[in-house]
Length: 215
Image 1 (cartoon, one colour):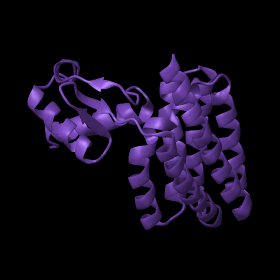
Image 2 (image 1 turned 120 degrees about the horizontal axis):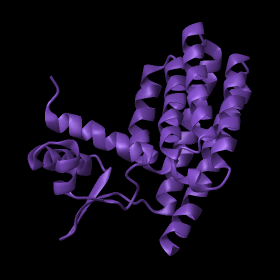
Image 3 (image 1 turned 180 degrees about the vertical axis):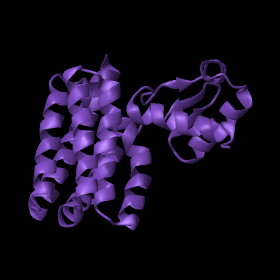
């Protein structure tokens, strides 16, 4: 059975990655303990672990916050992620099987349903499922591992462009184009579409952060 602290770590990661907890949000021990029905001890342990991983940051006399990266740090992350995601799409186009193809299609349908309902939280989760399905389809365990490591720092920001009107619908269209290229075994186009998808999203994040800070 998983330790309570480990469960808390995964719960908090999920909420940060899906956008329930956003960059800059404060994590209060008492409210987290009450919300998840646990004592403060596992909450405190989970927070320490996420601080060590760089997902949270401690501020003197204020406590823990979801870490806020600079615009430059975000662009650097998305540039690296774009190349790795492009590679995953390229390999998926070469190695797609019926099983992995169906998994990507199912994730795309989840994205489409969430977009139609304007459910940004559900879309954030479905988006991660879509990308993870492509990582799996790449058949490269080391690449998947590298993507998981960078996603820890990038995922809190992936959902932020969804605040822009019409972005969910456009993101679904981009996903559909990527899936078609993979399904058609169009290696070069799958790579190009995925890299463009990631960088378009990445370039919007600093602008959105600026707007939110000014507001």
